[in-house]
Image (cartoon, rainbow, N blue to C red; front, top):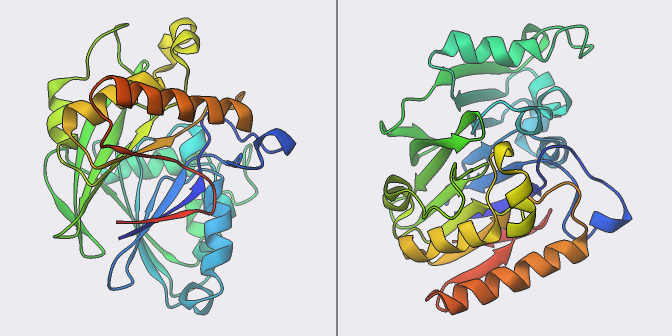
Length: 285
């Protein structure tokens, strides 16, 4: 699998000179399979740049197909949809998997952001591509472009979000953004560790420094210490930092990286690789 980062920020886009090295777009990650299949995880503003890239190939000719996995439907994970060029090309096919309990509920949420008060598109029905919306059932595996995907629900402030475990038969990638431990100092939940267990790559929410998380716990995000503890407990091969706070500069993220590395080393995770997600960079498993 090839993983590429198109948006790595949390909450709102944060473009500008202070975020140019890591990027200022909100959550969007693509996974390319060994056979050329495409899975997109989350539809933040980074989706626009992925779409522009895809238009140079089959999607520009109306011959593209992809699955989209939605962790949840907060704005920073869906606001790129109306600016995703491939959905306006007839012949392209997209299957969207996400929360909501039923396809109708999930489609209604996505339709809501196309309301004329928010968007000139007015409705999902103005898409030219085929857009098939499906609700996932946690713990029940499904196929997405030849990959085996299982999801788990975790706390995210007053709401919840989905983590995805993606398996191609030889390698495993886990995506766990927007994870919020409800209690300060609590260890990772045993069910979460079981879900992450042995993954070759764990992408985990590292929104905050611990001292910033302490004053914003109700927002439902992790610190780098939370991510490091989860990676160590689950014995993963590599940890990817993700979903940086919108107020953090590149220098702040550099500090998160150094601190997370030190935490891994000090707590028994010296063998775990550490990668900070950067827009445009690719990671091969």
